[in-house]
Length: 308
Image (tube, rainbow, N blue to C red; front, side):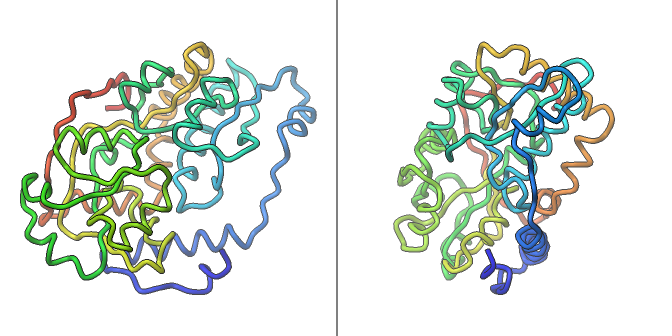
């Protein structure tokens, strides 16, 4: 982290300001130690009876460029707003790092209590979704990371047929892989996350489709790879990011749903959302007049009960 804080690489103009701000915030949090008491300590220190331990993938939640920064704060907000009815809580991360299918399995096995992800039909069957979209319209849009120097190739892409002539990269455990397959988009399927950026840089495929709200941070994560944001293309398809709990955990699901509803009503949900620089940048990109929007089909449209 220290090396990142000491060096800012040149970035493309569309993302430069938001990445610079994100870098400044990341450096601040990296240099300021954060003392967080364990759940055992917090619950023992409480004068109130009862303290619910809630395990969630809140790794890197103090880093503004990480997705967990926003989702952890939104989860805490929903829990804080329901403390009167449901009692005190303590939020902690699992003992080991979990992601993708391992994280989902750990939730179903009782090792994790809540997580957030882009929903799929299988996820809806295996876990209990809280149907409040966490990212609004941003969840439906994706931009492309490409290698610097390949801009001219993508400038000729106008339609889905054009994009089908190129090859993407995608994590095979993500719902987005299903969407690419449904729309005839060739892709190299891998497991993991970081390797996709390195494989793109090495020429193993032509682009990596990323959430419009994520993509500027990812330039910051991998500045040495000389990747850029494709400046014109937006992919659009139905996609919803929800909190999930175990099917049997109706009480926690009701608590989070109630807390999110209250946060929407009192304006705190929107205020938190607008406090994230890369979210504001993403909204600006949706309003840009020169965007080419390529709409993709998705057989499963998802469910929405609140928020949209």
